Length: 536
Image 1 (cartoon, rainbow, N blue to C red):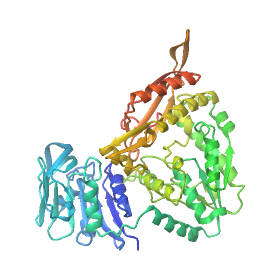
Image 2 (cartoon, rainbow, N blue to C red):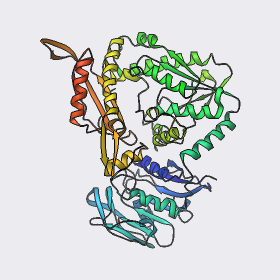
Image 3 (tube, helix red, strand yellow):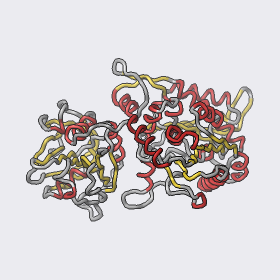
């Protein structure tokens, strides 16, 4: 039986990050709404209660029946989870004199408590709460304090219950991984048998049993998720998998040709469809971003379905849906946060069953599986790319000439990011390594490309704007482009990347000199929120 940790989500922005940290400990976990604990599931070896945007005193605050698991399996409450455990058992939670947010240090902690095994004095933690625990319930004792928070951590003296008011899942808590390891491995006794290798072996066996000799169709995008899903299915069912890769004309420069070559080298059976003329014709004169997305989505389904109908006896449609897609699509109140192209079912006319071999994986785990499958690194580390492609990176209507301009400028930018090497240490190095980027540590430093250091980079063509420039002795009246690069862990939030000035100067100069139609380069220094990563 596969062991698992259940993370009950009370609405925290970092709940997915808790899940990723647990998975990094080679332990399977599942994120569920706060009120959906799987009673009777004997594979559950521990429960983590997440943070929340609510106060425990709010009328709409999420509450859970702790008796479902307290006293039966180990429990760890984080932030709101810690406050709720205290509140529900007779402790006191009150408004803090000032919001406790940011770095703090554990000035006192019980080094004999298993939760703090291996901790060093004054270990840095990250606080983020407006309420604070002013009294813990009877039968509990304080096991850690900071200068301003008396009950930074507490534990039951009679049951396997621990609680911390700081966030061990974030990078700013320097020994957060150690704390989670102490809970998951030492306290919950995880066998640590969840790995890329075990996932591949188990999933291939399950796919063989699930699909048998049936035919499967998979839509490829060139991205890491669909590519890994294809290679995984190919290992399980071989020739019974047919992949369809549709070129809508708005991919990156030479991407259709290059990706098709990669797929051929991987031994995949891929049908490449150049449908660019249809997409350009249907997009002619359309400037509204949502309308562009709808047209591209509609046309893609039409083209894909037309090709799929040529594949006789197909019974399955495979998709590269990953775990965050499924978590984001419905939040804990049941309201849609974000729609995804590969979440929400199948077109009824296809009459196919759905196969999602990556549905339990986070993005970094998908990349680890890709490496386990022997896929080329440039496919595995490819940045996220929107389904509508460059259409949502061109402000205004779409024409082949505008796409050409953007492809040329973007190609210079992305190649530059791949070629420019930087040395990282400390927190930045830990973040990059945790994302699965292969790098060797030497003297506390790693060397990686700028491309591997950031989450996503893109170029935006401001085709509705023209700016004055001078080239030689002539004035020009051409378009500006904006460069965008962000750091993130899951794209829910993102910060603009601080790229080196010499790199930005070189790229800007090369774009202006080599790309006809561009005479100005800007850099986007907006974070998400309030901005989004893409411009449309």
